[in-house]
Length: 283
Image (cartoon, rainbow, N blue to C red):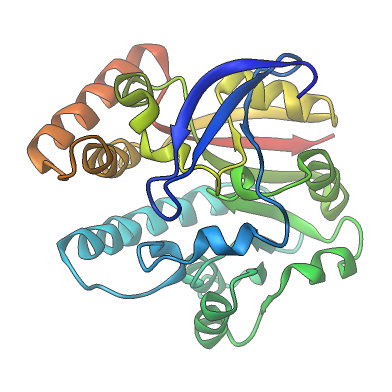
């Protein structure tokens, strides 16, 4: 807890009901979840049927809406990846879930590899991508500077040993390669509105919480340069829907839509959208 100070106390609304502290990292400005789960206990916090990224189910209106929005987002992600100048079109997606993004990229003639620690999600992803998805142990076996593009879609906040993870990403990325990271932004309007009920804190599964300045400083320390930031506008609606459920016990779709819309409207000026995509270049 050295070089940190208290920021907020947040409950795990999804699984355990436990309280966790968010501490400000004084060096970089991101937030740390404290206490972090012990490594042998971490998987227990993911044992919920509501963890949508690990399943393809469409059991209710909420899940169907999630998958519809995801299909739209996949097209935008593909356009983003194809905008990069690459040598071999080799991509690594870390935390690929059930593999929809990898499948989309693979169908567009990219050579893809994926990492997914959850066994059930990994099996689903491999059924879609001709078995290109491995467990996390594969990370250390890849050759250095293997990939033109590495993507982490709402994954970095889950990874322990943050410094080691960033060093690994730099090692695997080619010189002048592109690193794409999407994470929630705790400086957004919806985060400020919902405070301890903001669903994107998602403690303790989210170990780290970023804003624009903090993530730029963090990667600059590893000589990786932030070249572009893009919004994820759908996230404010999805997060607000869950946040209302945590705050009042009901999702309240109309109020959630209003808060999500206000968050995006205010972000037109501040650029503090609910979630942001950061594009780094390896130097």
